[in-house]
Length: 496
Image (tube, rainbow, N blue to C red; front, top):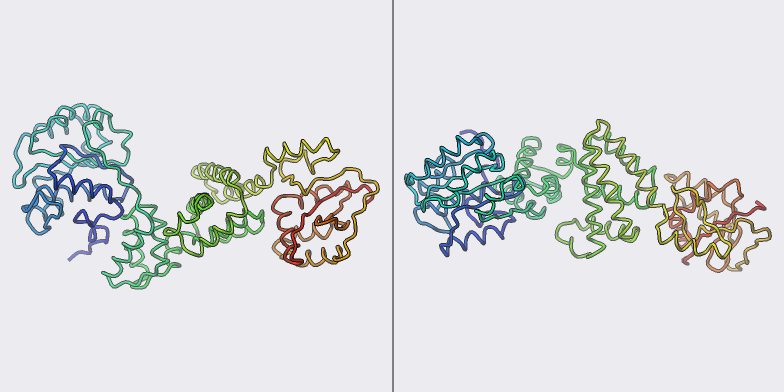
């Protein structure tokens, strides 16, 4: 006996078997029970979510010898023939290859004949949007007033291409993408039936890669069984399909939000060298940023769909970026994803997108610019006001000519020693930040302001240290060393 793939072997046979489409199955079950059956149905949705399966289940419910019933027996001749696709009374038509007006005219001529065995003659037209306009027009009258023994069921992935006059004659059901947790549960069900050990993390990785399509997930599981045998781990899924783990995507996001350009580019290089799909990684990055946006609005919304470790990363990253900045970041990466589809060197465009994103996070917002313009009346200027590539934080305000500037001493803290300790704590991955911090002149401490001086010729170093990400990082190290909150102030001093 020939091998039967999982997508066919575990195809839903009853309304209760449908995964993630409760709104559709419940409505159809009620319609059958109450004998409120429409003459035409339209099932809409992306690939692999159950459009054709739902159509066949409905056909079995109507033509089962025990029906009409919401629980077709599955063993009578009518049920078995419909499941096998060779029923005389359920005519499945491929709209892509039978799309001419002549094909529809032949169908229209055949509808007047009574069913051979069942109660209804059911026409199931898949990819109905592929019919020509003339074919649609030829179908209109029959679709509006079909014989009592005829039912039409249409399925399509592109409802916008179906004529409005056809849509208005059908009951439309939109089948949604299936949530990842439901797909993972179904994969575990199949694995149990097939005596396969499937790690939960592996099931979740497959579900993420399937992007809401159950059939795709089942096909991927089939392929993994051929590759791995009876034990499948998360690394197997990532290696076979070129996916990136959720934690790696979270790490990349964290480096972008912290302004760690070398670390982010190095991580991207590692993923590229290990054969990961750059388009998939970009899609995963955008999806993570979307999850971060949802988490900031409602932290509990992702409890069931996201791994606990990833939830911790979301909580950490939510504190690093404001919502308006996050929306800008999503727009930037979405635009980069669109460009990457048409270029051969996807890694290059990904790298450029990361660098631009980090630079944009360091730019001043309109509110910050307005605030700083208001400070000009106090005789203060904004660091690097002519350079749009850097953030201009409050702590980066300077007095251009402080001829006799001297910070008030703080008896509790040795500023120079404290800065040496801070510089030593900067990790080697941030070598440029460490060297820039070491080049700063410690002027002293005034209250909780740690003041660093720079000569007029060293404004570039001051601007680099004054970016939002770098300043926050330095302030966090000061807090870690002293246990107190500090504000780093960067000052141009003519005497240095």
